[in-house]
Every structure is written in structure tokens, then in C-alpha cells.
Image (cartoon, rainbow, N blue to C red; front, side, top):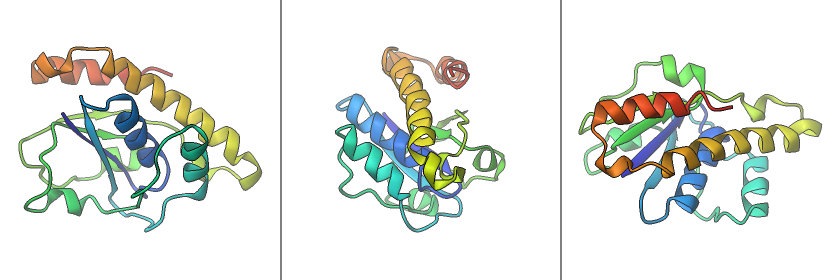
Length: 158
């Protein structure tokens, strides 16, 4: 299953969830992240936290969602937005009509620098719980409507 995680800037939340899925879901999912208006760089605290928690950050970069709507891009099965602004934006048309869900999380990058560690850890913890909830399910055999219902339920996990 290919999962695209979207946020406006693609520097923090979407990067975290992409890495969580690729670490915990190895072999079952392949996650990607992108932004509608990418910052062009991954937030430094995202990299600090992911490295500290044993995630690979090689290849981590801030990229546009246009990259995944282009010909030759991997076909997505699921698109998850993690910020309210990306959830409300008009997204490109994704080949294959993927299931969409919103898993909103407060933006840790909006925190003041002295609060970065706590803010990023809180966002990571919420996203990790949600990713684990999905990975505990037999999503490979679920009908799209059932998957959408479960993804929306998971998006409520705090």
C-alpha cells in the first residue's frame, strides 16, 4: 500500500508520519510526504527527533505534492492530510482515486525554539499511535469504504 502524507509546508508533521510508516510498516506500506506549498527544507527538529528515535533520515526532503501527481509517480492507495490548511485545499487529481483521510495534528514547527523538543515529541507520539492503529488492521483486504471509515476513526486518536 502506498500512502501519501500531505501538509502545507512538508517540513515537520508529514515528514514525521512518512518516517513512522516506513519504519513500522516496512514491507506492508510505502509512505511518501509532500506539501501544497513546501518550505524546501525539513525542519531541523524533525531530523533531530527522528535520528534520536532511530529513524533513517537519508533522503528526507521537503517536496511539492505536484511530484506525486505527475506521470510516472507511484500510484497512491491512501492520502492523509495532517494539517487543517492542506485538508481544506483543492488537491491535485491522484491517479487511482486513493482513499482520503484527515489526521490533524498541531504544528510543532509553530512552537518557539525552546519548546521544539516537547512540541515535536507530542506530534510524533500522536502520529505514531495513529500509524500503529492502522498497521494493526488487515487494511490490505479492506474495501475502500471500510478503509476510509477506519482511517477517519483513527484520525480521532489523541
